Image 1: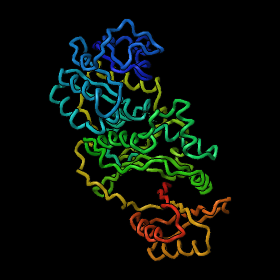
Image 2 (image 1 turned 90 degrees about the vertical axis):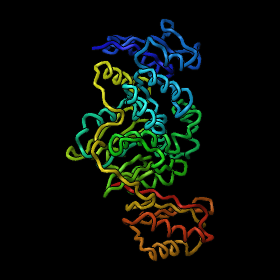
Image 3 (image 1 turned 45 degrees about the vertical axis):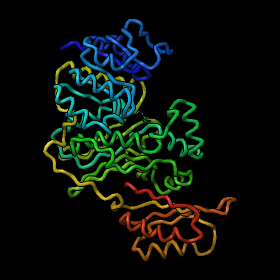
Image 4 (image 1 turned 90 degrees about the horizontal axis):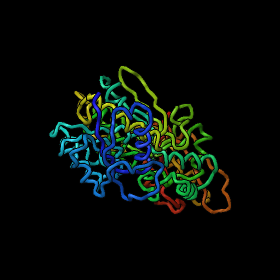
Length: 423
Ligand code: HSE
């Protein structure tokens, strides 16, 4: 096996985890040599000793350095220094190994072209679901399958928040503040809670499964900010957990890709995944349904994924960046955003006045939306009350039309929350 000379860009949690693996007595230490490192702050406190590596203030100088074979990019961000350094490395005929889902989701096509032109590879196991080898599973293990759907919990921060809200009955903002205090959520958690981070990961998996080209813009994104304790409590009562589900479904030549809060039946393995754990379900022909569960972040799991890519590069098993089950598949159209046919959960926030329930059921009936269950808890001290219903299977655009009609009425104090049910 060939020995690889590494330039390591980024010495945060994952970078330090990789240094630890490279300096240990595992297989990685026998095949790679870290030649140079670069990070924002040379003197930051770190759990590993970096003094024996050449230091580069400029990430781009490290990327262009003739003494490295591979740039390991672990600074993140769709643009900026990460992309600049990755481009320089590829143009200088160096492989790139990255955990940067935002960069691949938003610029993957451009980067893959430059990699091909220069005869080098981009590897990115660590970009999706941390330690779970889902990229490798799709690229290699399932390469000859026809993928029907991919769905999962791909953002640990939002899953931690939903799990804690469920357990404690506390509000979103208070649990988010805790997650930040504990260092689980970023100082700016926007991408995690808005669905953007899971969307980046889904774009990469969809590219492998369906299209060969990440298309982040085609993914419809909704976050968890609107979820209230009453939703989690009611979902549980109905036999469901609320999860931020990233999903790509191919059907009749159309591809539907979304990240949205979803009620998942409690007996589904995804509903059991609590805290910062990730889970991915793949349904494919002829293999059937496979479930992958594990740590989606952290030093050990993510460094393990980076190390696996380095081992593969050392073995010399080259293949195009987004090759996999997508090869030879039909070209999918993007499914219309609100054309999903499913059962739905709807939570209304209304003024507690006579006749409100009659108005809801009358309006839904006129739109041919059939109600499966209907719940109103006795109001607390406030004037506003939560009314929750679930529908039988209907088209989401029909449901939205009905809710739009209701939104004009004085009793409806807030936009209703809609979530699909996954049985
Ligand atoms: N911020 C991500 C999460 C971890 O919360 O899952 C890295 O992808």
